[in-house]
Image (tube, rainbow, N blue to C red; front, side):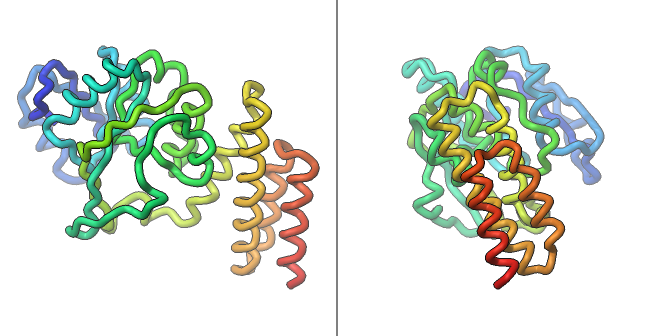
Length: 268
């Protein structure tokens, strides 16, 4: 990070209650651009929010602990943002899984533009690839700290209501995955947190009618699938809990569709 070709930066490292040698390594670093904050282990959302809150620059970029930036990342992305007048942008990335470079599936390909509809299905923006203006962050943030996972899905879905995303098609981020302590490998049932996110989205009064329709249909499908999975694992109480949880933000027709699918699976 401190080896970026763009030198006029502020590096804020948030130590989220680490139990390894992170503190010792950080204590040995000497650079006027470096600021180290520590907190108890509250999770990635609070760490990112804290760093963004105390930052002094007009641009914010995130870097997760298991990712790496190419040396020109900030320089090239900042130039791209300024030339295009973007409030938020992302770069392309390289994926490394278990030490081997892999090609992402077509559905995971990074893109730009107005991303609300495609972002309903899956997260299309990687935090480590993002650069965002401070004013944009203040309008759309922070990350939802109540979500132990899918907090990025939630934030970028909210941001896509109001902002297009600029896409710089250069692989300026290296993402490492497949290791045992990766968050997505620890948490089972990630779709549950996407359900929570969509429920919160549909509770917003400023959600346009067409986007409300798209979000409601996506939520209905997710809840039906989640409920069916619960029933398959003999967890009818959890299926009923989630079905009832979202019924208040769905229209009568969408809620009826969930109930019909849930009842059919229960009988079958």
